[in-house]
Amino acid sequence: MKDWVNRLKKAHMLSIIFIALMVIIVLAAVLIKNQKNAKQASENSYNMAFYELVDYVQNVETYLAKSLISSTPEHGAETLTNVWREANLAQAYLSQLPIESQELENTEKFLNQVSDYSYSLSRKNIYNESLTDEDLKNLKDLHTYSVELENTLNQLSDDINSGRIKWNELTNKGTTAFAQQVSTSSLEGFSNLEENFHEYSGLIYDGAFSEHLTSSEPKGLTGDDIDEETAKQKAIDFIGKDNVKEVENLGYSENATIPEYNFSIKTSAEDSVNISISKKGGHIVYMNSNRSVNTEVISQEEANAKGKEFLSNHGFKDMKETYYLKQDGIVTINYAYTQNDVVIYSDLIKVKVALDNGEVLGIETTGYLNNHTQRDTSKVKISKENAKKSLNKDLQINSEGLAIIPTEYKTEILCYEFKGKVDDREFLVYINSENGREEDILVITNTPNGTLAM
Image (tube, rainbow, N blue to C red; front, side, top):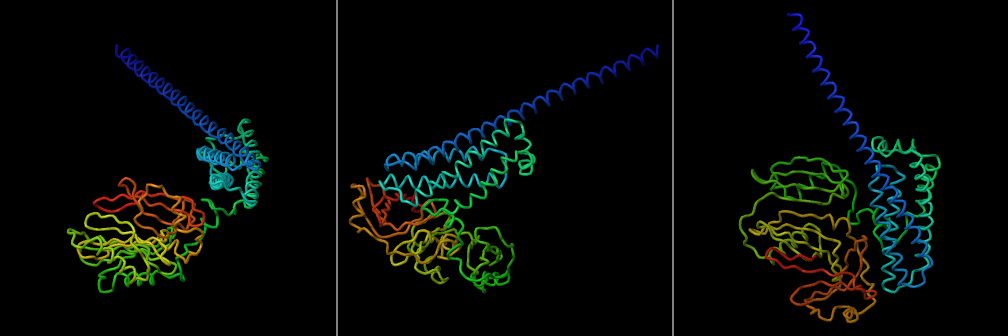
């Protein structure tokens, strides 16, 4: 009887183990199937993105070819706008592919360039200007490159169709897998693209991808490199030696827009100041105090004057207040550089002023250090009265003058600046001083906490 019970228990245990194994096998099968389905879905998604990329690059090539023979500004504007759109869509699908390589980085760079260049030329056509010989040469160069890119992507398409490229393997192995999996013809195509790209990458134009603008050194960052100890002394001098109780080194930011040394300076038991000094030239880049402000005593006009005086005392001359924002007893004021009564909005410095006693609690000079230089303000080819002909007839002008404004392409334009109202709403209108074009319109918003322009 006892043996029978033991055998029964053993059989029961075996059945439990069998059932557990079956459950594990079923779960594993389901998991493998789900992983396989997810992998296939991912593969399908990458394939779709790639073939969309191929289609849009083909469209870019087609529209660039059309732009070379377009004979009217109207049709030219339409064709170049199509180039801009198709290149942007190509970039969107390229970004979805799991490849990080120099080859596709250059492809992205080319699509960026052809997009921005075609947009800038379409604006010329919109203003009824014919393209110059140099414009047409650049378009021809870009078209030649687009044909090469199209051919190489078609070769890559063959690699995908033949199964040589597996997107999920590229996701895991990256550039090495790309080099190992694609065919020799595809690699040679990409090598040719990389070699030939340098011939086209230096196109100079009024556009966002103009190499001489995006890769330039900060213009206002003058002087020799300094070491950490020199930067520390400059930070102390900026705060005022008598105000410094303790200095802590926060390290060197090598990869910042402006490489800088960072410090925290105690000014009292409760208050401290964070400050950054540029490695090149030892310029103040940033300063911010944590002191709290509980009352508002001084006026906005007094705060403007305090900030302007502070800037002048620290070597920033000829600055003019523009817009401001108040918060928690502190007003942040934007100051722009002026040259020969021309307001230069690119050379911007932000200053924080305490409204209890007028103390400057913060400063940020990145815009100024990146852009400050002497400009040619003589390129005024139309009179102020002629510029006004481009304005909306309902604009009631309150002030007018000259200003240099930055563009989305990282360039600058000398404009007439007209401030006025339409139906009790304030606007700033910028008219190009060379050709009378309307370059930009800003809406001025006055709030209890400040004046902003959008």
